[in-house]
Every structure is written in structure tokens, then in C-alpha cells.
Length: 464
Image 1: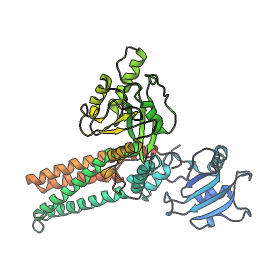
Image 2: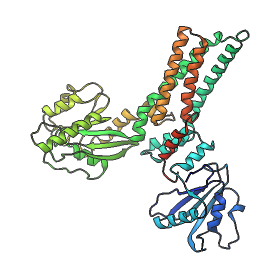
Image 3: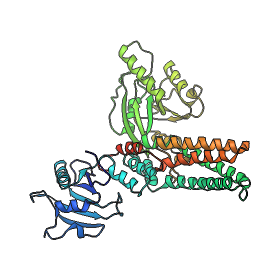
């Protein structure tokens, strides 16, 4: 069956699980009529078609034979004052897998069709209530793993990125129109006196776009989490750190070296920073074939990680394995924890520093007594939530599609800068300007193909 944008659609918009309330959303030109076919008030006389917008009504959902399915509250929202900008009805029924699905089945039998993934938000986009970047921010908001991700997504849902893009595009369009006019009427209009103004404006565009692109790395950390590996020689306290950060005994901890032989990965959020945390086998030289596999996996995770937390047993002297690990740490992406400071210290920061590149923080730590825990979280904030990725209202790019389009616009504006410096014809200016203009337009959904739109919204959940 071929679906059309004029169909009235319905889906469960809450999690299908045991809960106090479940919500079925209906949207489309016949949303109210469909709801009227299944809904009745206690007296049986009131009809939703007569209800005003944004009103709530008590009653029952009944099947085609008149049998009561559930006791419900129904909210009516008239177009265009709804999420989809269409007539929308939401049925709030009792939660529970069976009850919610039964109400949905009744609605579908009354004339609605099941919504495709993301179709409600897609309709909001197609009906002009939101642009494409705002629509994508809805999914980012739903998938947020921490407060910073939620805050950034909420800002983009409210147009923080769109307004930046539209401002730049408006300025580009102004200059393009002036250039075209001067080319069409050279006797009365000349663009030469505006070349310096365009050059200055282009520098500003390049700076602004470069800042947005730069924020994308931090944006990935915010939205997806920081891939973090705990490394060190056997029995340095890696599993104890894992358990401390998780707040539970997830990894086995013993006094026997080499307890961890495989990779253990969990996700934890510390003070608005999400860590995709991996505990690895101790990195050391071994002839044990099983341990060798674990060590090799540890080295691979070490290479691919965004952050390495290196555990050094401060109660022991450094050995060759410690030194090899310390020399492999990446500047700006590593923290050394001098663990077991509750015991007599044999290795201190001075012993460790000479094997490290610059810009690696060393923290005195005790996993058993939580000493250094706050200093660790502060260090993480400094590394991953500083500057443009801070607790401010700056836009942070978290979408790879947006980043690629910004880079395309940057390339076009770089070409424009070259044309301006070389004194080329104004025709070159308009070509580069319009290329940048179109690339930025694709971020907010202008000049994007149907296939791309369908692909973006297919990633949404069914009821959104």
C-alpha cells in the first residue's frame, strides 16, 4: 500500500511497558473524526468535533461493538496549533503493554493507519512548523545521555542553530543580489566600492563557520560520550576504578594479578560528562595465550580511545610495563592516576613526569578511599567541557551531516576569499557565494531531496 501525506496516522507515543499512563497520538485531517468513532463521554452526547482546540475530555474508548476498552482522557489540538501543524488528538489511557496496544488497534480499525518511524516530526517539518535542523534536534534530545546534551539539543530545537544559519544566508543573499544587479546594469551600478565590505563580511563568515566546525569534536563527546579506556599493568587498580566510577561492583577485584582478561565496557555519567568506560586486561609481557589475547585487545582499545585513564600503582616502583604505557599516552587525551596513595608511596609524580609528554595531568588517587575523585571529575570537565563546549549558550554541532555541510560552505567561502584577493571578476563571487548559501540551506532543510528527508526521519522512534 502506498502511504500519502494526507493520511491520518496514529502511533503509541510513550514507551510500551508497564506504566501509569500510555499515550496514543493521532494526526491528520480526519484525526478528530477518527477519535470520535472510538471515544464517548459518560453521557454519550458530547462529540469531539464540537470541542475547541487545546481542551481535554473525559470518557471511554469503545470498540466497534460498543464494548469499553479503557477509561481515558482525550486532548484535542486543532491545526495549526499542534506538534505536526495538523489536527491532532492524543488519547491518554492506562499504561501497560496490552491496554495501550488494544486502544491503538481500535483507533486503526476506526480509519487511521499506523505511523511510520518519525512521521509525526516529518509532518511538522513538511508543514513548515520546524526546519530540518530543529527536527533532527528532537531526536538528539530524545537520545541525550547527559544534561549538556539535553541543553544543547533543546537550544537547537528552539532554533539556536537555525537563527545563526539564516543570518549568514541572509547576508550572503544581499551581496549576491547586489552583484547580480550590477552585472545586469553596469552603467548605473558598480560593485567595486563594496568589494572591501564583502571581504570583511566573508572573513566574519569564515570565522563563525570555523567556530561551529571546531565545536563538533566537543559536540560528539557531549552527544555520544567520551570513549574512555582504563589502562595499566596488572593489579594497578583498574577494576577498582571502574567499580568506583560506576558506583557498583561490576568488575571482579582481587589481589591476584591478571583477574581481568577481556574487555569490559559500561556507560557512566559524571557531572554531565558521559564516559563510555572500558576496563581492560593489564598491559604486560606474558606467555599465557589467553592473557595475550586480552593484552592485545587492551592495546587496541587504548589506541582508539578519546581518553586514557592510566593507573599507576604508587606503592610499587615503576617497571618496564608502566614505562611503556606512560610513553604511549597522548598529550591532551590522557590522565595519570597515582593509585593506592593510602599505602606507603614509592612512586610519586616526579618519577612519572619524565616519561610523559607535556599536557598530561597527574592526580594522586586512592580507589578504595575515593581520594582524588573530585579532582578527576574536575580534570574531565577541563578537558571536555571547556571553552565553546561549556555551560554557556553557544551552539555546539553534534550532527555529522551539519558538520559536513559547514565544511562545504567553508570551502566555498575560502574560494571566494581567493577570488577577492586575486581581483577576479564578480561572476566568480556569485558562484562561490551561492555554493556556500546552498550548503548552509541544506542544514535547515532547503534544497534537500526526498530520499534524504526519508532517511533522516526513519531513524526516529515510531511515535515521534
